[in-house]
Length: 158
Length: 158
Length: 158
Image 1 (cartoon, chains in turn purple, yellow, blue):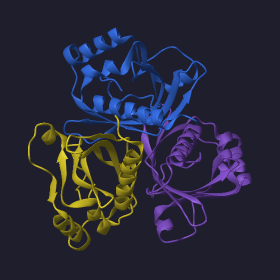
Image 2 (spheres, rainbow over the protein chains, first blue to last red):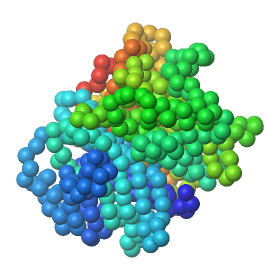
Image 3 (spheres, chains in turn green, blue, red):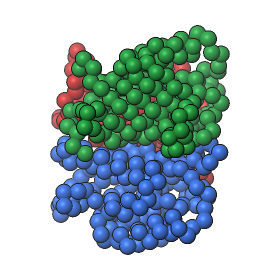
């Protein structure tokens, strides 16, 4: 509740830029939002709430992230689709080790060519943010999604 | 338009915390977002716009709110579901009696076990906020929803 | 990334007020969000990304906007519907000519009488904002929508 206004604005910018990167399809830039050894995890809420380790996607370090992007852009065959993130108001706190913790609800819509828009993923980002050479980077990003049923498949990062 | 930045940030935090409380299913904490004699009302837009008193839900005072939560958790039989609030940017003003008035659009998605996410409620919060012992509390919270058709039923607060 | 906090808050207010104007159905006030010779354009993402000029709607100047509103309120026969905008976190920058540029994701839901809510339009506002006599006005507002398929028709501004 007592996060300084400037940091708060920078975190809002971080989320807006993150969404724009993915929604614009600039996947090559996506790993740059993370610290070198960050953990990116997409996990169903059911598993997260029970502390179960199984994740839909779990990438540790920028190397794995770049590999995933290479896979998406060069090896996975899939029907292309657009994503659109609407990210809510963040809850920001700073823990005793000066780690910035952010929780924020998200909704992601998907549009496939010649189809109507549909709800793609609904959930909450549970993130840790570090200041790295004056830039904000995610050191942990858990995408905890509510919808057990993933429509079709999860290709691009969310 | 001239609301001081710190108050504005605190109100954004209030909405984010309110959403997190409900989306996490911490219903026992929900009445604590209100002043002791607050009015919580869920009302269709059609009725609200015409000044009609009929509400889908109308709770006056924290006693009624606690009773509702007791009902939800202990007596109503219903299929469990998750809620997820995405709350927009608030319009904040302060009236001549120093009451803080907030209007903010919301979308709420619902996920039932083994089903896809669906749009649950779409509308606007029309709220009054009071400063109570340095905390912000809702003294009035009207959830004015656009969708005449409520999918299934309204169990948890929105 | 270095936009001053006060300007940032005013831009958030601009978007919140814009959404409220349309969602409340106060269409007569809508042209007042623009500079006299502003360009309002609704364009599919497919066309926008390729630099193609064809737009779903293209209005240049407040005169055309007022004419459109007159058409909506007085001449077009259509089933009435509600709109509800949920606008995300904006990315704001100021270019070398002191023009404020804003990009922000939006989701718009539609409710027709006696139907459930549905996703109406999903996309991004790509806007230029000018300070006109101390008020913020859009000098350019491009609504770039992802969904190729517009459900039914586009009557009201988005």
